[in-house]
Image 1: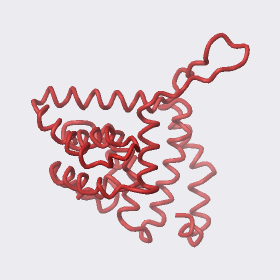
Image 2 (image 1 turned 90 degrees about the vertical axis):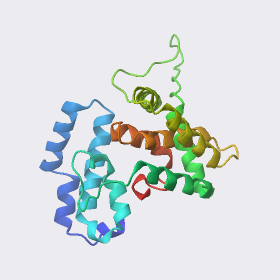
Image 3 (image 1 turned 180 degrees about the vertical axis):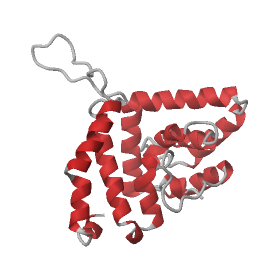
Image 4 (image 1 turned 135 degrees about the vertical axis):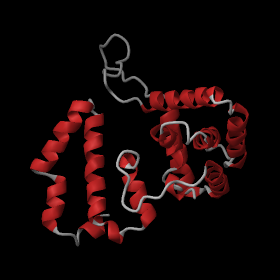
Length: 220
């Protein structure tokens, strides 16, 4: 968006990046989220606001991806309901074999962060490793909790067999070259299968490793 913003009204850009309005938003977010989540949420809100400012110059899929954090509570301009679950899974499976190069490396890197708990830092002279401070976000814990919810939801709705079929289909289609994304592909497909019964935020979290390569909104 940087080149587009260079041609936007500077006063409008300044309003979204600093000043009283941003201070108000920061104060409101801080009441609901601890750090570092509050800072990340503020930055996300600013990016989305700037995207709205130059929306007409962005491709629809670009804007949809940027706007994603707010799409479930504040549907974006020209919002269209997502296609059926079957169509989304078919589109995801179709794209998986084409995942290669930098896109595959990024997917693998994100999958690793989401699947492995952060290592505790050690400080010389300290007794044992330092633990995460209360209130800190743990991506791996959130990812694991979302996947456990998916499994429980599949069992509760009597859709376990179809859920597993979607998972196994994605694992077969994903690149088997040691990049480490096979299991994550199955997790993403399982989440897509339960899109109509799980909170969409959980679905998007489980899909996150593939969001840069082919945004969730492109599965139509």
